[in-house]
Image (cartoon, rainbow over all chains, first blue to last red; front, side, top):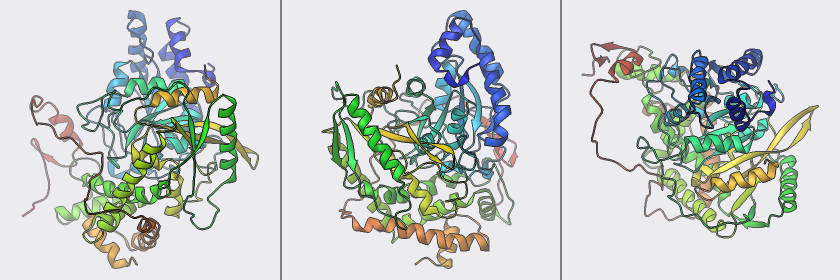
Length: 477
Length: 93
């Protein structure tokens, strides 16, 4: 089967015409998984019951109840709960945990007849930008296995890029869907905050977390998004479809911000390839007849520093639940509180500990004003910047990352260098805006072709504009 | 300036046991992270009204509970230690 050129629409038509079944397709992906996963480590598990689910989907084609997503194989990030299946956020502290309920996204996908084929590797609790922080070893970039796939949804993205899955779900708290999508040459969407329920997603930064789809095309990502979105009573921050007013837009106007980012350790972070690549993307949009304007977003240079205050603060609260009492790892100490210390000391990885401690620091008496409340104020200023920008433009175009995928081990000992991977992506989380990375060009490094991406951002609940502009940019019908 | 004793204090508040080598790495890392986020000082902001942020939970009435006990077995199965229908922990008092 020609997995490389498959799309959800093609699969759907083939299944209606009886060219192949969902069982056939799941078996194909399983074959590729068996062939490639040993090297890439994109999956933590290919589910035993995938074929059973596919059989149920095939029945729906027989009885005429099949919809677009029926029989479509979907792999999910290891922080999304699928009842009766293991889920561990790639952390030792959840070793052996089996989900006791379905995430809302799983409910919706299963109702549509999609087949959940496996769970994918990630940075522990989605904390990282390289998938090196997994307790189960790093995932490798299918384009160059000496490089990272990005993160934290590195497994979900590498699975799509290596044809081990047609589409996958990731989560995005500061760029965790979009940055790896750029590094691996696929499409990744971070939806509007609240448009997809967080129920059943292991919480990291609750005011920032979003579940979103990853695929080879904008159309595939759109099809999954349409299935998983919607208000859910189990997530009180989820929103109805029509919460934000939509202005009438015939031909979207594209805005490109002039960016004065803070520098870190000189200029080596800033890869010229991304700038050149952005210029090419701008030219392409102009050739497609788009009006491209320069815009100002004066406060986005403070997005990463504010993000690395707000997010750890939320992390420190959210991760207090891992105490060795309710689920997962338990390490015995002298008394109850000692159990907590030992379980968390042994079960949580280095980056998770760093963020819990930073979060505890920025929330502590005497420092909260200087850090936490200041960061919230900056967050409001960034929101205001975007609101103003969207009065004049409809879609904002930036690079997704500062450069192509970096080497495994290159940034792992320098947390701040790793954090700067979020430079273009974190504003969407800080503001709740939808943003999508689409493949755009590549650079050749030592004979390997490394993909790059550009990011499209729109105002709240305007995913429709991202899909429209993204499809035209990629030449999708 | 973050010192070893600060890391020990934060770890205690966070209920995390650290090894000696954990502590050394964390002192250096957290120092550099806080150094980086310190650029927020450059921003002028009015902090008289402290806010939790735009995204907040909307509480609902706790009504129409599901039938008692239907999830008990599944949930208890995940707990490291149980007794009858309870999760078991060490004596607190």
